[in-house]
Image 1 (cartoon, rainbow, N blue to C red):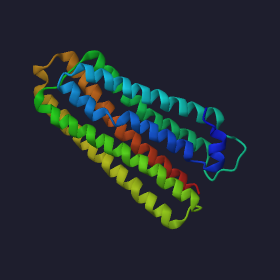
Image 2: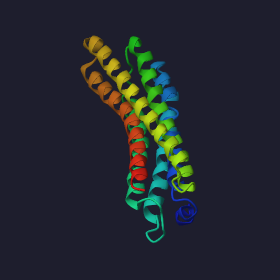
Image 3: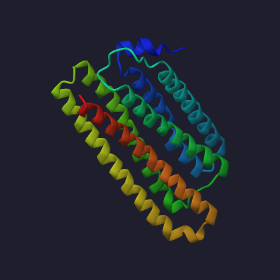
Image 4: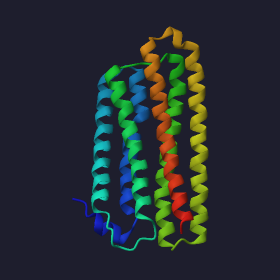
Length: 224
């Protein structure tokens, strides 16, 4: 069992960083998942779905340990509530990744070939935003260790801005994918069209909640 109290005594942010690392494990296989789906390799689709579900479960275990054992009586340079809110934002990323693969594994839907490359590009961008948010965790540890040094804060704020910009790029890719979907949706089953729009939104949520973790860090910095 993870000794969360001991971890927080050493670093107020390490358990959240460990949690984010596990969240990223749920996002990493998404591109391979969509490629397998396009190729109708449903054995691989199922394998990846199980892999992502396992990572999400492990992220939940870390989340619950942090929630249950985050000390109330130790000095921390950041607000306990802020830590828990950021934990929830991170965990939502893993939840969304699992929702995506569970839905598509169940329905075995495939996009028209003309849209597949755009979808993969969108997934890759959402993954990139998540990986960038993971980098924020490490950098924030440096900010804490420096006692909120100006140089470290400026570097972190720049990284947060870069995450925000990347999330905007993901939004643009989603908009382009939706427009292309409008052009071909009459050739698809109506129920599949509805579910694909839901999938697009969920992929966008991965980028969006990654951005929100950066915004939460910005607020933590501003309060110190």
